[in-house]
Structures are given as C-alpha cells and as structure tokens.
Length: 155
Image (tube, rainbow, N blue to C red; front, side):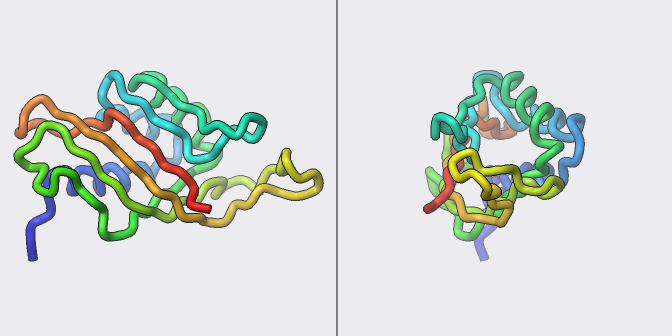
C-alpha cells in the first residue's frame, strides 16, 4: 500500500480538527491552516441572493468561523478517493484536492424557517457536497496552507 502524501495527511488532520470544533476559540485555532490571502466560499448560499458568500484573507475566514460556526457546528467527512493534483504533491509547492464529502450543519440548533418556502423549515439533514481546495507552501519541508476553498451542495 502506498504511503499517503504529506498534503493528504495534513488535510485529513485539519478536517479532524475542524470536526472537533465546539467554540470560537476552537475555530480560531484553525488559522494555522490558511494562507494570509486565502479565499473561502461558504457551502450554503445566502437565502436572499442564492450566492455563496466568500470570505477573504486568513483573518476574514477565521472571524467568520469563530463568530458563526459555534452555533451550527458543521461537520465535513470526505469520501475516498480524494483526487490530488499533482498526484505526488510531496515534491510540489502548489497542489489541489478535489472530491466529495458528506456535510452536516445545524447540529446544535433546530432548523431555521426556509425563507423561500413559508411554513417550512430548512433541512438539517446531512447532504453531499463537491469540494475543491488549493494549497501552497514555500518549500517542500513546509506545512501546506489553503489558498482557496470551495464546497458546493450536489443537487
């Protein structure tokens, strides 16, 4: 069996840390995984515009996570295989990961009213997303940092 790349090892460690977050401080601890200029799109679109909001910069991403996610406690479980580009990223300084995952949100709160369907609640059931993350690092001995992150519900 082939050894898992440094990128996949770090990615799965960061996913585990994300999935164990319970407080604003826990989400702030994720800053170490983001490039200072990173961009991250939310999974869920804004109910009024249908656009998935984007958060810019490590500070903006961590502020968003720390302020909004402790009430929702989202969880993210990538399915195997995850496609790594280049296939052997251990010798690279830029790489990406693509795949699908089960995503679950609102684990601590009841579902909110659906603004598009009066009288109905938004689902708080797990759903499948596609994801794409881009990474960089200054040298092959450095830790990987997310530069772009995008997860979108698969309809």
